[in-house]
Length: 57
Image 1 (cartoon, rainbow, N blue to C red):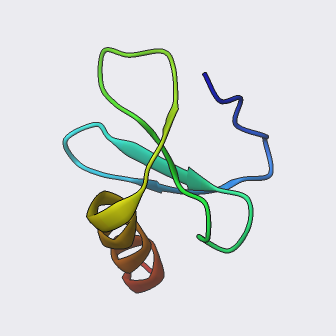
Image 2 (cartoon, rainbow, N blue to C red):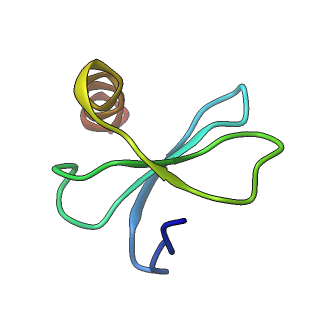
């Protein structure tokens, strides 16, 4: 489990997923609906989260 700091940047999706990062989206964590624990993303899944975060404004 990864603990997400309060100052982390976050992007919330309409389906309930929440992406977090504390280092300008180099490391990405996700909290999915129905789960209390965050998990670290890698590969294409992390790339998609970075794209969404940077284009969310």
